[in-house]
Length: 224
Picture 1: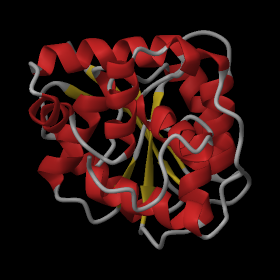
Picture 2: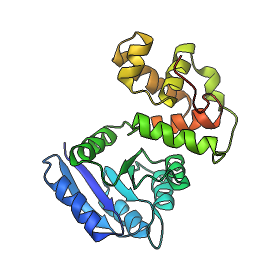
Picture 3: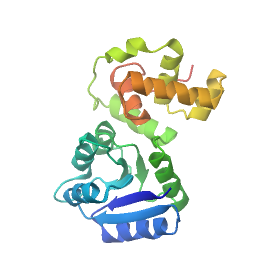
């Protein structure tokens, strides 16, 4: 199965670099490029990519608003991977809130870029444990995230599902959660799917954001 990718970045050299890397992979197809958010939205609607690599700071319309419009649109939305230089700014966090499936550093090694696209296209979220957890914790600690009441679906979670949600929010991968809870990784995947369904969430990135904002997990909370 071919994974269709759209590259949205205002720097031509960056787009060319990503295209060169992705064109070398037989299962990846770069279906288009765009130089700003408005072009990106139009291209996504026309080309229907599976994954959009989205820069944040662009003219006309930034990647944050473009991501929000793409992920909130009716129909099957593409997965969005945010491209960033990682300066722990509010835009990255807001992009996760807007529905992005994760983010990548612009200097990410080629093999990690390719793997990230595969992971996201497969329906999971790219939640790089150490980096994403630090990003969210720092932003919450700084008061950037608005606190909100836990959604009604939290009451429907079993004790094990709540454990899994908290483990996800601490930045653990499925394999790490399985090891910590002494269960099979397939069992963890089932729990994750149920958590997302009960909380009406798109992916585990949104689950992490919700867990911090609703106080289910607190910044710096150690593993149990």
